[in-house]
Length: 459
Image (cartoon, rainbow, N blue to C red; front, side):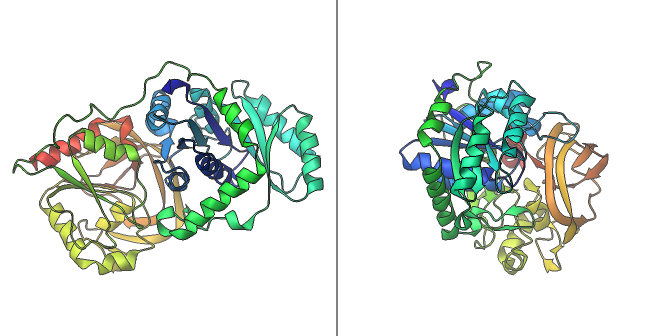
């Protein structure tokens, strides 16, 4: 049964301990053994799922109890795990870290409990020996509902170091399921918002994932990890898999002119941030979803009735995006026609008049620039203005993550009013355009996609 899919959560005491290396390497190592592996990531992060997808050949999916609510975590997990032999869930930050000031909400520990999944704790042992026992004991005993089924010791320096660490771990009764030595070749480059996405690295990303798989396969007891995953049993709560809507039984919806209702979604290296459920919801609402690359394509897909431009790194590719003048003009013309346009974060920057002094689409009378200040965190928001995405008063939770600034920060008709952590308005609603820094997960409010597609049909 799908509800009994074998599963593991890969967690750590803190960020930087090696979760991504272990989780991605484990996914790839299990896939190399012929298992169908379902990859998942706790939290809102878009970048790690790209490496997970490369490791497994399946879409990497997020499990975020803040953005989607605790009630959707298990259904979304089951949706992603359909037809899989095993699921690997990479945690976020430290095991018990979640939304600031919200207790365990959105923590790896909470997601592990919602999934009834055993946890494997990845410990950076580079600067400790016997003290690892106290560390592991603390994480095991902090919340009795969290089942820590084993530990993987990372960045171990020598055979002697390994022996000391194993002895310490044995003293607290937690099995060592793997020991990984320091390995330079598995490192992945970072920049101002974290790891460089897979789409920007090409063969380098493939080689990095292969190195992670070899490291985990050599240093971990894969059989023991699979046995632990299979011991998880059915998910608690009797949830059914999430679905974006009824399976289409007919051709995509038609515009008023009779042509297929086509929604163009920006992709390519500059726009890599998106949740798979968004395109699934658009398709379930009747749209034909077509991806295009603003770095390469000089035209929008033929018959585009609506446009979605998600997150990514336009600041890294500002010169190339600016140089593609034909596409910039096409986007501006579509927006001026009143067609629905949904832009999040990177999409907001692309619609501005300029980014770091370089011309962008000019849809919004606003200027964007790189900033020294990192804006990061969950947001509790309410739609201020009626738009192609939401009726005024619609509440949604979102996430901001950027080192850029837009001036002004809001238009005459703002997109969102932030309720927490601070009260402010943000974003732009103009004609059919909804542009904002806020990343949202449409599975939490499926009406967003349906509304957008309906506006595409009638605009």
